[in-house]
Image (cartoon, rainbow, N blue to C red; front, side, top):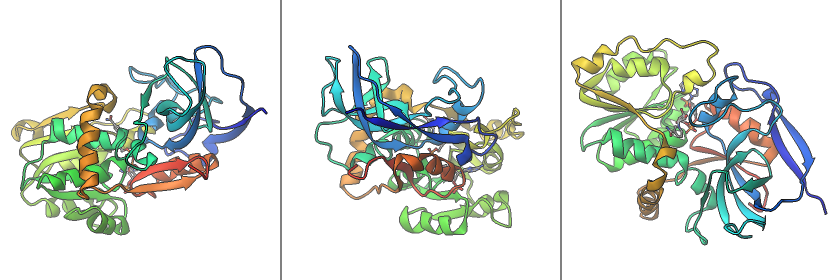
Length: 342
Ligand SMILES: NC(=O)c1ccc[n+]([C@@H]2O[C@H](COP(=O)([O-])OP(=O)(O)OC[C@H]3O[C@@H](n4cnc5c(N)ncnc54)[C@H](OP(=O)(O)O)[C@@H]3O)[C@@H](O)[C@H]2O)c1
């Protein structure tokens, strides 16, 4: 019996914030796999803010090509191999693959994939979130660049998001004082109650971000974990403590920009505070995934770390889940459970 594959394609290039009408559901009969290929039934789709960048015309770079119109939207999924004509992949294998927002993916060995343990000790969706790209980014950004020390002040932007929710908790574990930026008072409360941030700051608050940061970080910021760039980065730079470290993890404010965005005008702060600012790509640390997953897994098991997820059901809801992330409606990792038996 032919399987009908549901896929979400890029119907038009988003201008600024992505909208659901930029995406379209298509149903296509799944062709038979060929020699060297294997079929993955996707169980979860990961929604990652960074992929917004490659929806722009001509956005291809050293990491990924620009997405094509009317082609399935590129993304990370977690699924099980159901058929294989490749010697290295067997039915039953659990894989994370970089393919697309679709129920079934036909893959070959050229596709980026990462194998999960046969009997994973944590819920599968965790491997796309806290034990996946976003959790690992929080770990690498803080372990390699931020290096928070006990008593230091750590500021995190998009603090309730997939990366930010883990970054704040790790900084807490290291004994730092944590301040998180989020988009509403309600989310700030959740930062403090559910994630253990010492203080939440509403980036839309009436008094402005600059004053709120000054008030929340009276000794200055020792580590700024930046997920958004733009005016938030500029505001954080104005309140650095001497020797501060700025972790450049993401720049969500610029992914949808149609024109080049102005850079921070206060980089001189880096000089006078003898601060350093460094970017990183999680994927380029592939050889250290076991180390990172091992540590995050230990903290999860001991209850020192909590996984927070924003989960929607059904491939039809993937575009909605992605757009809601840019509206800040998510709390924790945004993920879609593809099949009800996920
Ligand atoms: N370097 C790497 O290897 C790597 C790997 C993974 C992810 N990242 C980056 O990490 C960042 C977070 O990604 P994620 O997937 O975890 O998303 P996320 O934080 O779960 O969701 C995005 C959050 O950003 C905030 N936001 C949206 N638009 C904003 C704006 N214009 N200004 C300020 N904040 C805005 C919203 O929260 P509020 O409304 O509450 O502020 C929203 O919840 C992204 O920049 C992503 O590219 C980097």
